[in-house]
Length: 241
Image 1 (cartoon, helix red, strand yellow):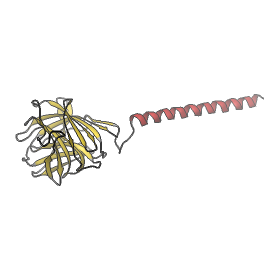
Image 2 (cartoon, one colour):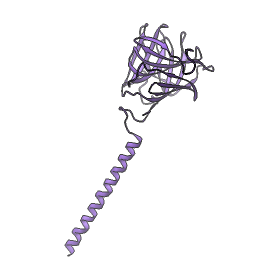
Image 3 (cartoon, helix red, strand yellow):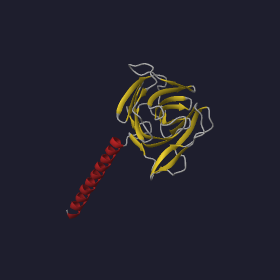
Image 4 (cartoon, helix red, strand yellow):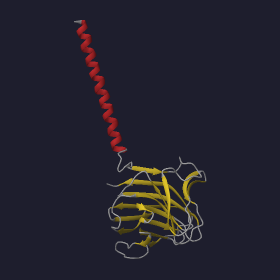
């Protein structure tokens, strides 16, 4: 009888331990599915602070391109008063030249993008912005803020030709004028939902654009024009289903 009791007690303890382990596993899986569920290879919220990249080098996992004339683009991590940022450093490019850098880790169709931009210097151009639904250097969307012109404009780059797009309810206006941006940090944001793009600057909605040129998922990245030496930090990507 004593032996039987010991056996029964051992079975009960074993079942209890297995149940506890199963519950812990379920809890862990639930936490991962809610906070880290991948969407097209992307975590629901991704933030590039650039703090963990090596200064003086193009960040690993990113590829730089340029569209149009000119000779080169030069994207590197630099130290900005003790803070690592991603910068486009080439000053050699002429007016009809566009610098892009895209992240290779995923493709996405609908998302909210946000980044802080500082137009550090440039004779022909300053500032910069996003590229999205990036197929290649000649086919993608662009939105940028420009301290040289104090405006924000959204374009499509189709077969290497850049065209500004009309605004919802306003038509062709070449984007919108904004308060002076200066050479300090400004925050550019866009929500991308199917064919509707909503643009914000420093938490203020500026305009919307509807376009169906590029409807499939693509890479996302950052953009400058000509000789704009621009700094980027806290690049946030939030997927939208």
